[in-house]
Structures are given as C-alpha cells and as structure tokens.
Image (tube, rainbow, N blue to C red; front, side, top):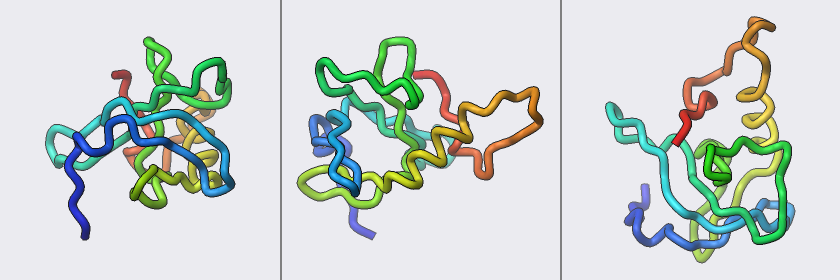
Length: 109
C-alpha cells in the first residue's frame, strides 16, 4: 500500500475514468474510530452543477472513497462505482433499503 500525505491531495483535479472533470479535492472525511477515509470533499468546477451527486450544506461534493480508482497527478474515480454509491446513499429510508457498506452513508461535513 502506498502512503500519501493528506496535504498532497489538496487541490488535485478529480476526474472520472471516462474523462469527465468533477472539480478539485478540498478536504477528506475520516472515520474517527478506524482512521479510514470515508469520502473526498470536492470543490465542484466553477459554473457546473451536479444534481445527481451528494453535497454538503456548503455545496461541496461528497465523493465516497470507494469510488476512487487511483491517485497520482489527479484523482481518478470509477464512474460506475460513483453512480452506484450516490444512488444508494440517496434512496429513501422509508423504502427499507440500506447501503451495502457503512461508507455509503456519508455524514454531513
């Protein structure tokens, strides 16, 4: 496993594996108990809206870390996994549907 300092992630471009530009990394959401990254907090591209994506109250995009495919000069997201995670997190609770894994439930930042 390669270790990367969190400070090196700040301002990296975030793109999907299909070439769609999303924005830049602003911050991370980390599980206090395990230390695992739950989500990337991403500043969306200026002038772009992403109505199908989960956002916090400040308008930052919350990208489940499970959707991250690679991190090098930029963060590459698996678009299929991203779509699946976003869909699961938005399903109404009254439908009785629960996320497959806990990280799909993204906390508000």
